[in-house]
Length: 131
Image (tube, rainbow, N blue to C red; front, side, top):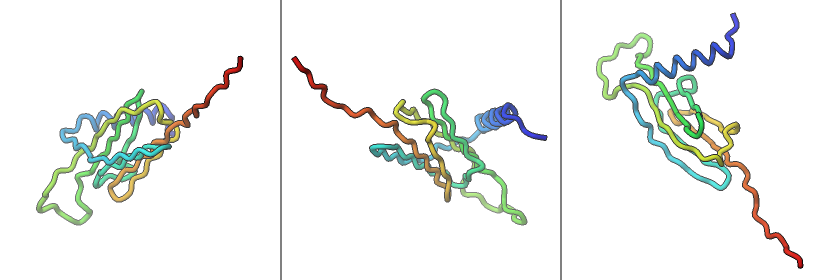
């Protein structure tokens, strides 16, 4: 059976509600680098991979959600835990300069890297006035 776009949207909404109902949220540390043509965000989200992170934009609010599972590797039993697992969430307001359709996201080794390209600005120029 083929999944429709509506079903996929419903599944994402259910997953988002599940993330929102979690009792523990961690705010990942984020480095922000602004360059002339783009803004780069690097979020520290240990334990998160590409299948457990969601980046969304609604109006001018960029939301990063990530989920870390609480399961032990197969064949192992947890005997001691030094930290709790849970969901990551961070929100940012972004300007209209950001070209939303060209944003890229990559997760590697627990770091989420977002590249937010800026729109090309209109170069200023002087208008010659004749008389």
